[in-house]
Image (cartoon, rainbow, N blue to C red):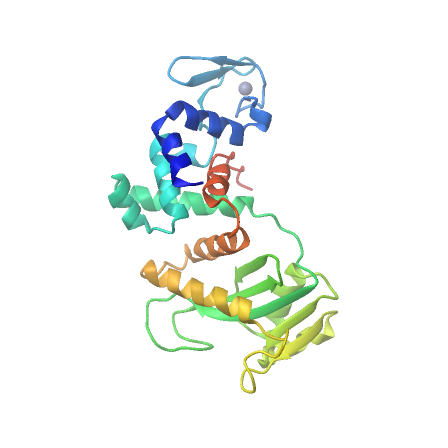
Length: 281
Ligand SMILES: [Zn+2]
């Protein structure tokens, strides 16, 4: 969303509420978050009551953003700053909320976009590569660096990327992840690391990149994923180290940004944020 359109949204709360309703409710028709009933009465101060179960609710009740006391205009600002890759600290200063509130809000947005990401197997030609991300200590580059979290990524040429935290980077783990994410018969490009040898036995066509000889040889390269890893490293640096339990959310945020880089991110994030929170399993 361009700044001009955002300005309109932020200056007129009624417009923002209409947009939220349109994004949230099926075809703009209001329904009860409790029983999905369609007979809804309007009460004062933007509240509603269900004609079937008598549940009273607001425009954001039951959604990701409805879990906090932050108002809709404040949420719009937080989403804008999140879209622009600001940190929670910057958002707290700019929007005038406390740092814990901003951090909670950003975590909520990360959970919301994760809940929206559609699964589906990657196919045709993919790059596979592992990396170590995060951690607070500098140095110790390369495989097995202390304090870093092993991650594995698969990128479809001209398509989506899927990244995931892995317990280790043995051949078995990487093969298991590949089987989960990639259609059999797909051509997989990897680097020459030995862990990737097992892949040839399991229904994938496999080509290795020899970094020592030449960085890329025609189509045989993994430059796309290496670009993503360096973007991820820069981003994590900006956040001054991310705690291990929140790390997967940051990783999926990067996956989301990469997969939707040509789309209107503000609109997508807002759409995700006003969806109903799924029931815990
Ligand atoms: Zn109801």
